[in-house]
Every structure is written in C-alpha cells, then in structure tokens.
Length: 296
Image (cartoon, rainbow, N blue to C red; front, side, top):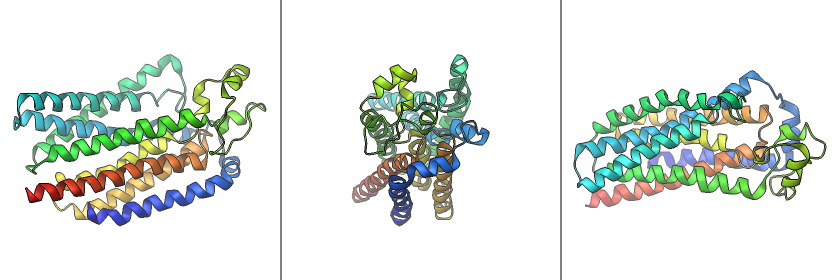
C-alpha cells in the first residue's frame, strides 16, 4: 500500500511523458511502425485486456467467499453474491468482445465465440479469488474489495467511454484508407465524423481512437499488486515484481495497438493514465480505510 505509492507515481510519470511526446509526434510514430495485419499485433490486441479484466472475476470470487462465510445478515450476503455475478458478467462482456471484434481478429460471424473463450478463464479466476480470500481473516476485507471494484468501474466506463464520445478521433488505420479522413490531434474533436461515416461506410468504432480502452484495460493488472497483501504471506517479495511486470504488459499492449493502427501514442498513454489515476485513488482509499479499521 504505502510502499507502492512512489512506484505508482513513477509508472504514472512514464505515461505522462509518453503522452506529451505523442501530442507532438503521434503521426510520425504511427507512420514509422504501422503494420495493419501484423499477426503479433492482432494477437496481443485480442488478449491484451484479458488479464486486466480477469481482475473483475477475481474480486467477484472474493465477494462470494465473504457471502458464504455468513458473517453478515442475509441482505448483505445477497448483495455480495450480486456483486460477484456482476463482476463475472462484466469480465466476460468486456474481454469476450475483443477476440473477434473490430480490435482483434475481426470476424463478425463468430464474434460470439470470444465470449465462450473467456468463460473458463473467468470461472477459474472467480474460484481462485474465492479460495484465496476465503483463507484470510482480515477485518473489513469486503471494504477493500468494494473500493477496488468501484475504481475499476470508474476507470473503464466514465473515463474512457465518455472521452471517446467527446473526441471521436479517427483511428490511424482509417486515415491510411480514405483521403477524406484527416489526421486529428487528440485535442481536436472530429466534429464531422457522422458525415465521414456516411461517405466511407466506416462504423463508429473507427472514430474511437482517443483514449485507448485496451491500454486502460491492460493497466488494471497493476491493481493485483494492491490486493496481494490480503491473501499472500511475504507479499513484500512479490508486490514490486508484480507491479512492474504489469507495467511491462501495459507497454506491450500499447505498442501492439499502435502497431496495427488502432491507436496513436497519445491515445494509449491517456488510456493508461486514466486507469493508473484510479488505481492511485483506490490505493489512497484503501490506506485510509485500513487506518480506520485499525482504530476500531
């Protein structure tokens, strides 16, 4: 918790620097590495958010373990079970659509297969969360899980989704296909995107470049480092490796998104920044909650 503060800010600072660089060199970076059908890029894009979204199922398993311990009144237990189901469902919804959707190995006719692929992974993480959190006797563990779930929601929905609907930035891969679509910096909303959709036949998905949901989703893996102390003894030895391993994963996913022309450098940087800011807030709230619990 407190030990992670500095490291979280270091990682956040890295993406702030790349965001500034992207503001000035977005087009040049994309031109240099763009490879539309790059197999590596498409594969990482397809699975890039899965580890982060599995965190939802993991937290859901934690809620389930609390509900089945029967420490609280029946009403609370029902709420915990509902939260478990919601986390499991959101995991499948967010991760499943990436495999054969517009941002992965695009094939609309079998898009539903992606959701099936995710089910065993989500089920396994739900059980793992249940098993590990069932072994902890920490007071108020449900508060920690609730804080984590809340800030994950804040990172995925209001942040990324809202900004996408404001800026409607064209993806680089679309710029290379249609001369009618001009390059837009992240701070320049594409106001005529509906006209461009009619002219080119592109879907609204091609005007959702800023910020990157993939970068934000992959950055959720960083939150695993916050939860480690609650179910692993000797957590000091694995917290930092887990934190920086997640950091490397975010960079890899972000690179893959630029590689296939789905995003610009500033897009992936801002996606990561939004999620990491939510993780920083979650960390501070957890520290505050634990202080209160210790006093009581």
